[in-house]
Image (cartoon, rainbow, N blue to C red):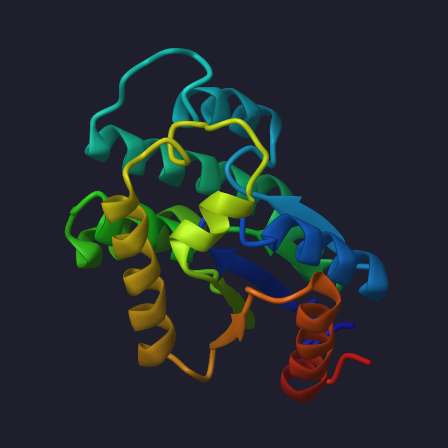
Length: 206
């Protein structure tokens, strides 16, 4: 559904590892007939960067290099996919965006959050989501229920994942008009009901 300016609505799912973001993002996009995308890796260039970022290429990355590669992925993603879709009046649902850089490279890796924010905003050309849905769960609980193999981030120690979660919650608390926090430690159908209620309230989606 286009906004009053004719631009599509932009919704992002954020959260730690194995909290159900991809599942819920796919459901919402299908429910709304929106474009579904993700980071890192939502473009051809992004697919190559994803291999580096998630460790598939076997390269060890400095935290600053990691943040810069995430920004490069985002710049291409916004220019090639997200912004054109929004300007054409299509809604976009994205699995991870700027919030992930702030939580993972800022709070998790210990880089200056303000610097990561500036870098991300430059990469995104100032494009922020209309709504960010944070799926929140205790990282140990998420780890215990995950059956997937460990990528570079999933393999990090629990201290890292606890910092990421705390960072996400701080980001959400500082901007409640844009962020909404949902308890993800429930059956997916229950989370979906809350998502439907939130997008109806915030965006008028039914």
